[in-house]
Image 1: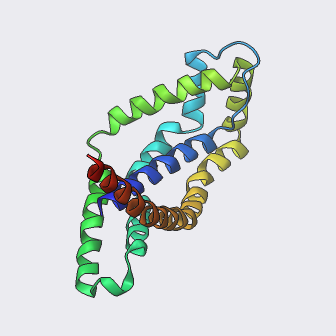
Image 2 (image 1 turned 30 degrees about the vertical axis):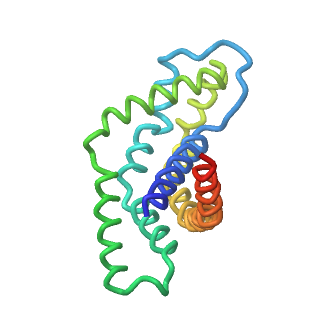
Image 3 (image 1 turned 60 degrees about the vertical axis):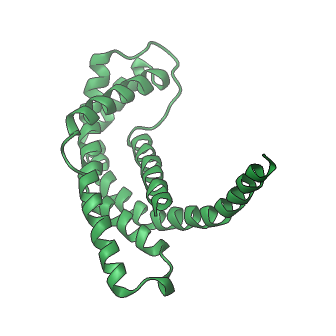
Length: 187
């Protein structure tokens, strides 16, 4: 169970990173490093903090975690009552993960990471072009549709990631345990 939860948190971290990368296209820096002021404007126009908040507060993310974890349980080993209790536990902790307690700290970290990454990959000219595009009606429409598209994407991807992770863990852990046991016997 701990391994499934740990892998779920890892999968979510990867997913959140992928979402962040999809918010702003990656281009190579070719000229002047963008200013902090322009990057703050770009972050505002592309709603970087709002999207991070959406991800953290999304019931959809908690539901995806819950569904993925439930899907990973063997059907023949779990009674309906245990499945219901498991669902309650996962739901409760998923809500705790999405609490507002550390939102401001997380937002500062998100912005710090965003600005550092943007400075590595974008020139001032590219940042200015993105601000111009994402300030447009079309750009704002794309930004506004991105969360729903990602929710649909994640709803399809998370079960695949979870099943693959659980399958690998089921295969690898016994082998690893056997090697560790053999190592202990050598002592």
